[in-house]
Length: 367
Image (spheres, helix red, strand yellow):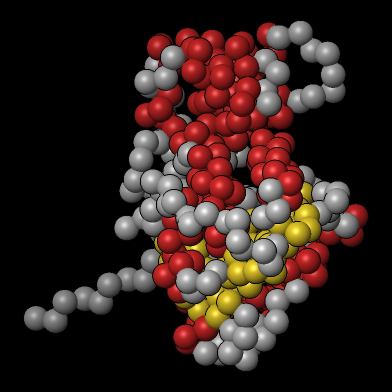
């Protein structure tokens, strides 16, 4: 007896005339089939679901000035917008090492880039965080990279997907891990952390001025009932915010964003990985090699600024950016998520005599 054919699954239904939830935006998730719909989303200044808009592309390409035949490195592949431009610029004969810690998005982006017609050997995709970049670069080009880009921003695909736990716009598990199969989730961390540590974390990772008050409120709520979802944590912060003296026009969700930022940085050891990259950065570049680093909050930018200035004093760099570069007013209007971006760059000195052999930090590429 022939078994009945399985009925095709119907797409997610949504209320009203426009989808609101991430999973409901099936047209945005399939831009090749729904070009006009995606164009409307872009024209409205929003980022289509499941995609990402690269930031300061023109400025990055200007300061890096990649040439045909160059060996380029993109330390944060993301959706591949910057990588596509770098791959194009280094052809013919050039190669791009594309690195990303996210095991969910990395293969998707690699597949998109592979169908664009670049020579197969020109793209090398590897999964790792910044701490493993030095070893990966050395394996592909012992003399270093001609150009290197490090975009420290979180990709829109990660921010908008409730299942990843980075966003409080929709409810989801309080996870926040770039690699969901490794390390401790934000929920697990909150179950173990003490008040002093959480206060320090909120202050150091997000410059939260009322870190102690929010740390107390979060841990009191945690003691009554485990905080396992994004909206549960967001509501605790909003309630605590409402009880505090209001001295400015700041909104409760501004405080929520800082709390989420601080936890995400800790969960993924983002500052530790960034510090490792900055220490090893001169060893990652050829003489005269160029680096561009895109940051999105003060904690990142402080580290990059100080590292590049110290490198200039130590004659590791011949040139660094005199002033931070920012997105144009036009880009900010078209893509509001670019508003906080800061771009710094440096050029590696040609003098290698005083550069000691690299001592690799414990950070290694993720398996």
